[in-house]
Length: 139
Length: 390
Image (cartoon, rainbow over all chains, first blue to last red):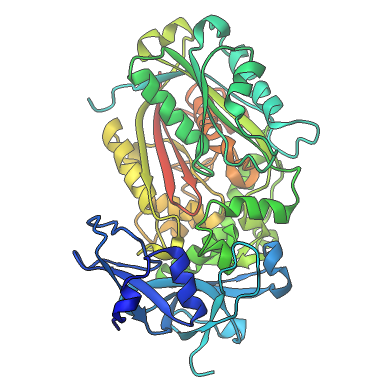
C-alpha cells in the first residue's frame, strides 16, 4: 500500500519507523531507483545508494519462521518470563522479531499465522519506542 | 601464492580461565603474556616487540576504556604502540588479523596479539545486558530477546529444517566438557552426562544451561613474527597460512537463512583458498561453541560435513578428541570458558599447543594443520584462521 504525499516527506529513519508504530502502522521503505525494500527503513538505499525512497505500509499479518521460549530474561522483561519470542515474515519477505503473546507455549508452531498488535508508549526516558507483539490472528 | 606462510606464531600464552575473583583484566593479560615470554626465551620483549593489538568487547564490564596503552604499560613495553579492536566475541581474532596485516605490510617485525575480558564481577542480568549490546538494539534487545534467545532461534530453525535434536546438541556439551576436564586452564574441569545436559534448567528453549558457554574472566596472547625471522625465536614456529573474515547483518531477523552463518561461510572460503587446503585436510579445530547449536552450525559452515548433517556428525563421534577430526580439544567456550574478548586468540593458543606437541593430555597425535573459527554476536562477524606446524 502506498502512502500519501505528506508521508513521503517524512525521514526514512528508525525514529520515524517507531513513530509510525505508535500510530499502529508497520512502515517499510522502498527505493524508487532499484526497488529494494527495507524493514526497518534506511535513509539511503544500501543497494544503490539512492535517497529517492517511498514508504510502504505492510499488513500486520505474518507467518512464524522460528521461535524460542525465553526463561532467563533481561531485567526489563523478567516479570514476563518465561515468554515466547519469534521472527515473523510479513509481506514481500520482510521480517520482524518480537514477543508472541496469548498462546500456550506448546501450541506454537513454525508456519503459524500471527498478527501484530501495538502497545502504547510507556516510558518518558530514551529510548521510549512503542512496543509491539504478535499473537495468533484468530484470537 | 597458496599456502605461503603469512606470519609465524613463535609463542602464545593464556591466563587461567574462570571466576578469577581477585584479578582485573589487565592483570590477567600480564599473566598470559608472561607465559608467552617464558615459552620464548630468545625474544627480548623491550627490544623486539614492535606493537600490541588487543581485543576486548566491552568497557562496561570493568568500567574501563582505553585499555590498549595501559597494557603496553603493564607488560613493560612502553612506548610500544597498542590499539584495541572490537567485534563483540570475535574481538581478539580481529586483533590477530590486524597483527597479521601489520607484519605483511612490512611496518612491524614482531607484534603481540591477544584479548581479554573480565566478566564475573557483574551479575548475570548485567552480563546479559552488556552482551546484548552486540545485537541490534532498537529491534532485538528492545523487543525482549537475549543472546541465548538469538541462538535458540537458530536452533529451532535448524531442528525444523533438518531434524536436528536436543540430544545431538547435548552431545556437543558432553564432548566439550570431556575435553575441558583434561585442560588445567579450563573454567569448568568436569565431565557431564547427556542426561545431566538434557535435564538442566531451560535458558531459552531449546537451549538449556549446559547448552550455553560460561561467563568467565581470562586473557590470551600470541607473538607473531615475519616467517623469515621466526627461527631466531623458536625451533618450532607455527605458521598462519590462511586468514578469512566476513560480516553480516547485526539483526538475526534480517538474514535470509537462519540455519547457517553467511559471515562464517565467507571467512572459511577466504581462509581455505588462501591456505590452499580443503576441510578434509584439517586435523584439529577450535570452533565458536558459545552455544551447542553454534558448534553444529560451525561443522556445516566450515565444510566438515554437509549442510544439515551437523547433528549426525557429532552423533557419529567424528569431532571427539579420539575421532577423525577433533574439534574443541581445549573444552571450547563451553567448558574452557568464554571471556569474550579473549576467546579468538585462546583458540589460537590451543592450536599452537596442538601443532607443537605441547597439548599434554589433550594432544592429538600427528596433527599438522589446524583451524580456528571465532564468531562475533549472533554471526555478524566471523574470522577463520588456518595454521600449519613448522
